[in-house]
Image (cartoon, rainbow, N blue to C red):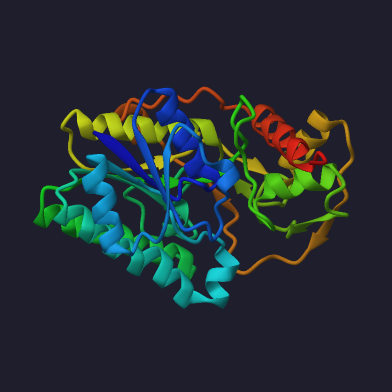
Length: 327
């Protein structure tokens, strides 16, 4: 038996593949390389270039590799792009995932782990956010992910499929061993942008608003190290393999850092001054989004090991420095 990782050549997916291979699992990656990179593919895994909506191809992969679990990362993730091009997101994140789920059910694959997002909550009414909070996504990205959550829940009621939906908060950092990291060109993640500014790859960075009702006026987010996020996926897979029920779980640390605190942490780690310039607020940015991850800790048995902002930014900086080295 083996695991199919969709989007396994991407940022988070490649870390999942590393962890599964490290644990001795047989892994197959399916990625169309629209944003993923061949250089991120672990050579211990089998790689197939293709589309998750290609039902014939996915059936072949499941059959030939005796797939008994799918961990689904493939999709589009840039919120502003989703506002400008919503149909791309409803295609990549919703319609194509519908095809993947159908193939999974038809082939009798029993376990499905789905990468969802805190964007399904929109602006939280209460912080920290629990899984039963009101779902009010403010972007096509968040809505496309929520639609997939609904599909999984409905299909599970009608079939033998069991799932774990993991709602990510702000993922950052890189593999502590330096094997993978955030390599996406023109990525918009705050920590990557700030690290690139520290390295001189960007001339400056923008802080979008300093008049929020927070301690320093800038937005607060719950930053989770990518390795701890992957540990939550491993816990989710064990949960399903042990015969437990489908669940939804937040992935975050339960405390947040402001934009200015992140910049300060990077300046301390790198000993470099970052040119951070004030800009107008971005539409739809909540002041504070922090996870209540009690479900992940208590039900999945998840135990994070990298809950330290300076460690997160140090690993991100080391990876970005590695990318910046001449070939």
